[in-house]
Amino acid sequence: MAKLHINCENVKETIQPEIYGHFSEHLGRCIYEGIYVGEDSEIPNVNGMRTDVVEALKEIKIPVLRWPGGCFADEYHWKDGIGPKENRKKMVNTHWGGVVEDNSFGTHEFFELCRQLGCKTYVNGNVGSGTVQEMSEWVEYMTFDGVSPMAQLRKENGHEEPWTVDYFGVGNENWGCGGNMRPSYYADLYRRYQTYVRNYNPEKPISKICGGANVDDYHWTKTVLDVTHDHTLPRFHGFMDGLSLHYYVHPEGWEIKGSATEFDEEVWYKTLKKALYMETLIERHGAIMDEYDPDKKIGMIVDEWGCWFTCEPGTNPGFLYQQNTMRDALVAGITLNIFNKHCDRVKMANLAQMVNVLQAVLLTEGKKMIKTPTYHVFHMYRHHQGAKLLDSTLTGVETIGIGEWKVPEISESVSVDKDGIVTVTVNNLSATNENKLDIVFAGMEECMVMEAKIVSGQMQDYNTFENGDCVKEQDFDAYSVQGDMIHLNLPACSVVELRIGR
Ligand code: AHR
Image (cartoon, rainbow, N blue to C red; front, side):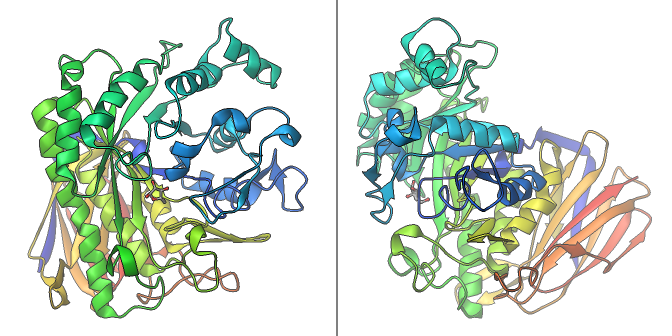
């Protein structure tokens, strides 16, 4: 019999809200159409931002948004995206679909979007094809309050006050689309570029993110830290606040990827097994980070993660538009549980990407918008944001799967918020079997379930523009409470959230 043991007396680190962060790139229909439609659009909007999308994102308490890329970031020249729109440069988005980028969404629009969302800002700078001067001037433009050419330019463009840049990425995937660099070369560039990412407002220092590894490239992590660590230990404020990591789940490998909606049970388990690999990556990269930063002051920033499938038939292959099934919901549930459990090191994560691209939480088609299964998982898990991780362990859990693709049947994480309410998120990874789970508390004599929610269905279920409610969050009642114990019947293929008080 599977048991989840929760020790309410062993309260651990805070789960940074930023672990529930998102990513929006100038890619396909993410920014244009998905978020920004322009003020003259028939689609209801505020200053050009779709109202339906902004409202839906506010419901999941989006904590931070990364922009403008991705690969796009290392080709982005920010001055193309400021000033009167009719004068902004048009260019070809060479990375993504070869379409014309008219730069109508630029720096001012990004900060307006984050204002409407009420979220923190994560701006990714250009190291691959940009200069130190360009990066340094962008930071000055965004954040300087005094007399300077860039602050003056910002004011002339209609924004008197500086904005707050919470996070700044010094390049993206510099081992690949961001310049095909070797780690020691990038590390030297990091040292140089970050010097000019000035903190103009000591009250709101910018957290600087160093470009980290692709998947299991531990050599990258080791070398980058080796070349930079004389600055990090002893660490003078703000040299390196985060080191990124990118990992995508491709069930059939990078070349083939596999369909988002057509898959069998074997591919279901293969996908979940690959999602669970995130834990190994965090532990191994984390062990290297521990050598240089034992106090864990540098956050691991998983600023791109999610499922990457073959794009939907008939769509531009460069747009990376894919559907989102219950399988995505499980990948999200599993991955967020892993991040929660490693919140001593993982300080931010950004799902790729927010709207219409890869494992999106929202999909749009003209005026219509639907919430994906992944959206509903983020909605249930929002209670973990800013709460403290609680010690929890599973016993008696069987493994399930096909062939080499075996996974534990259950995944979980537990937190306690400032009001003492415990949030438990559990996933049943079995595509076919219901699972019983007993939750046992140490340090809580009587428990009371205040809220119980579930997202479940058949493994291939997804929402469409005709039926946006096929997969949705629903009340969950397959549980009973006995003193300090809760008995759950978890349906196959499900993500469950319980909020428990005393
Ligand atoms: O998210 C899509 C792309 O994946 C990003 O632009 C890039 O950083 C990564 O390779």
